[in-house]
Length: 374
Image (cartoon, rainbow, N blue to C red; front, side, top):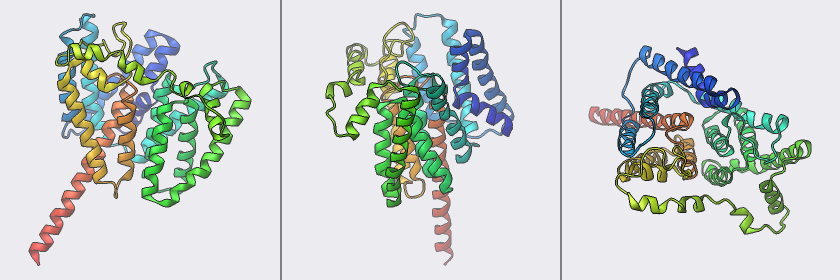
């Protein structure tokens, strides 16, 4: 089952079905997509069952049911996507229960290196790179999630390697969300240990690497020029930095949300699935397509992750860092229900919290028993 688990992780975390779709067409993309779901179903069938992920099941049930009321596309497509999603939720949650930190770290690390390969061998006129993830913002999320995971490792060499690679790959995406979250995580890391200030030294090395890559392939990216201007203390236009702001995109959907706040506007209307402009915000996507009920469930779910990851900060500081990465990324992306790697790593955080709660209760119960005996 371990080999099957690794194969499934590679298919999901390296985004292979989407790569097949983009590079080889619908046939290969569909084949890899159905292969992924089939392998997850096989894994779930043969693996020992435990408590399912009720948070995601309830959220998904409300979202898909309510959003279907105003869905006018092909029913078969909707039913297939819904069925695949629930299979993924059931099997994927059993999968993450058996994925350790090291496995997740190395798979994400190798996946993000594809960003540098694209930059070096397939330079883009846009100057932004995404590797396996096809979208720079999606690649930036994987990089920042991996960066947060670094703080769970005990091996110093792996930590330094992870900090360097995830930061460099994330910067090559030129995702503003990545940079903002990266700064927040580094501030939090000082709470863990003041020694983490060494990332400033790594930052110099990383920026030097970017300059080298720019000289070799020509990044040709206005955000890179803005970054170098900031470091050189040269004038940077505020309008340039705020260009293509996500806030402007969100604002275009506010009226539609207010017109139907309880039951939404239907499946696909806020995620670009029906020809509409995507909202680039999973929270707004859910309330816009399915109304306030699943939206409140998502907020409660994220609140649950934030609360318990903060509660266990002293034992597992990386959990709040990963949670921040997920919650902030969802503010800029509307693919919570379609990009399975986002859901997979979110469920991994959730299960780590479950384990920490079990350890906490075991310790408390043992203390109570000892007190009673004395």
